[in-house]
Length: 344
Ligand code: KG4
Ligand code: ZN
Image 1: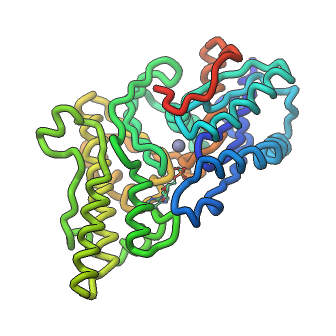
Image 2 (image 1 turned 30 degrees about the horizontal axis):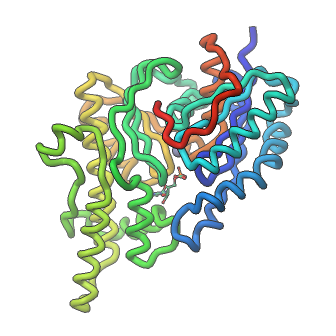
Image 3 (image 1 turned 60 degrees about the horizontal axis):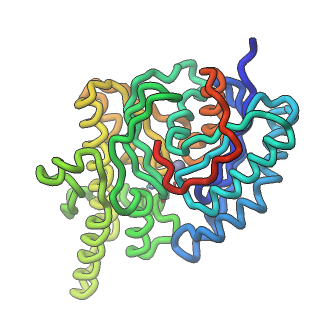
């Protein structure tokens, strides 16, 4: 038997992603982003994102089929992100997936976006296979979550998540404070390279012993953002010639330190010697550097998929769909709907 040919549809945020896989093999990964349309608002505008998906999804589908060299009729299944994410954005992908499923008679699998990020790891072409169990740290503009994955299709546990802003959102907000364009993460990362990460001691959210009792694996970045805002205001009021590079480096260090402290703690507590990273913030140079350092020190295997599979994409959804097919799971009935707060 050949591995299943699966189409994946992802529209949970600002990326319209259509991917096609055969089993664990990537055939196409087409991404159309509406990021530029959101830039002048300083963040993703749900209505704008939904409208952009509506316009992008059909051309993206055609491009993906052409790149993979397959027809809709060849598919064994269709997978779609049903949540979590922006409700209106999710609805576009879900409606498109249902229509395709009805029109082609192909089985449809509704999948969780966060588990999809973990599924991306099966598509690596370096000959290594996803090794389970693993802890997964997923960090983007929309989510900051820590998962314990024992089985991709049947046993994923949410250990913790942000109780306020996502890590990428914090990068974007602090970039704005420093007068940098949106999305600010890459800009902070760039100027931080010339700054001193020890110049200013910014707070690490939910790290005090009392916080750890209830929020051992949860994150909080709103206090950090406020601390940076106060610090910058004070310097501006005093008209000092403060170093943006030092602020960026110290802020970046605070975010990355707490992310990896909690991720490594989860590996140690759960006796899982493996950490998988996912989400757009994985592009951050310091995330990659400190992850490598901390994992090496703790004897943890670090896995980072290629960046095109870390940011939101349809291939990871297709890959998870293929896992469900290969595990003999039943498809979803058409009654499901987009769920902006879908649990893992
Ligand atoms: O996964 P992603 O592409 O999409 C959404 O979250 O929708 O992640 C985008 C987020 C943005 O907040 C962006 O500022 C952040 O990831 N980001 C970074 C870097 N590159 C992108 N944050 C920090 N450092 C980076 N190098
Ligand atoms: Zn995502």
